[in-house]
Amino acid sequence: MSTDAKHVWGPLTEGLNIPHDLDLGDRARALDQLGVTPGAHRALVGRVNETLPQRDAALLVSSRLWPVLAHRMHHMAQQGVRFAAHLARIAPDTAAWRTGPPSGTTARLLLAAHHALTTPLDQALPTGPRVSTTAARSRSTTAVPAAVPPKQPTPTEPAVPAHRQQTAPAPRQGHGR
Image (cartoon, rainbow, N blue to C red):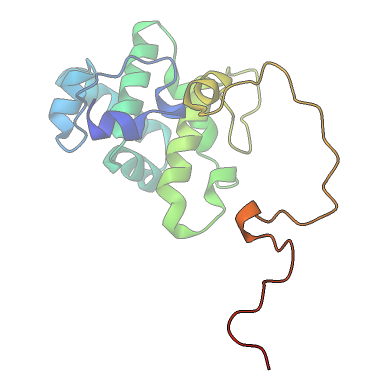
């Protein structure tokens, strides 16, 4: 599995088929790998430019993860879903993603676009990160324990390794007085 495929895996890719050899360093190749033709890509970029303010659209389209969002929008368009209506919900100046440090603007915009595309139009957009139980379960490193062991009383003496415990004073070595 490529490094890009590993790093991109998460909320942005939920419900999408991402190739194991995804290469986001080469945008044309990444779009081709994701099944977005050059003509479809031009149409998607045009629709994003019509829907979002110029600065936001440029930031979104120029981001490294744009091919993944383009794949989601292309998939929605193929199913007859009007993704522009979904995307328009992040355009207002009062949108939650606009608050925060400037260094995280692109990441917040990408996540807001993802939430806008995956949240039905009749529901409000989430204001914080949405937890995917499927993703959380698949990435968990712990297993659910079968039975919780009963609690044992805490020891009254400190836990000291047996070889370090002092049992009796050491015998005197050498000559006495």
